Amino acid sequence: MLRPDYPIKTDRLLLRPFTTDDTADVWAYQRQQDVARYPLWEPRDRGQVRDAVAQMAGETGLRAEGDCLSLAVVSPELDAVVGQVELVWHSEANRQAEIGYIFNPDYQGKGLATEAAREVLRLGFEDLGLHRIIGRCNALNAASARLMERLGMRREAHFLQNTQVKGVWRDELVYAILRSEWQDRV
Image 1: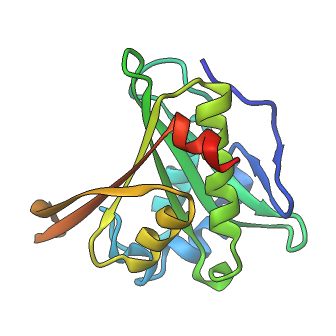
Image 2 (image 1 turned 45 degrees about the horizontal axis):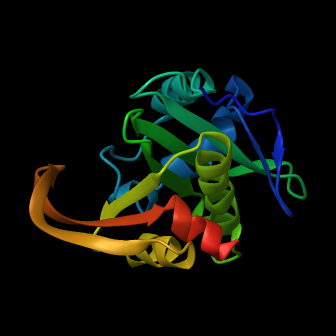
Image 3 (image 1 turned 180 degrees about the horizontal axis):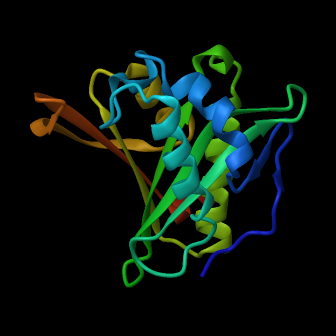
């Protein structure tokens, strides 16, 4: 089981569970068309974001396969949620999980997503003892692919038209990193 001590501090960020007080900050980016371009959902209204934040607020630890650890990424300097990171536990027997992230475009290009995602990989490998962590993205999402490459993840697959999202077939890239590869990088 993984239930970190909160908040988790990195050089410039705090990672912590979501609270209902985060709704306005999350709505600031989840309502944007550019942000909703790749996820399964369309731009969200305030009520949909409130519901999403309420769900994420309950995702504070990994107890069993299928659980999701959702963390608000907070910039103490701005006193704002600038994004979200998650770790989904796929297999206890094979010690595997998946990383995910969404960031407010106003704060992209500053290395914050890389810093937060790197900490989630650390949690997975060092605290949970995972063997392998994957990440997936729409093949058109070059920024997400570059982020996974900066994290030391290697591209393992390019699936052609494997998923229908919003009525359109999309290609998907799959990246992964092993615990041994992570240890070689730190």
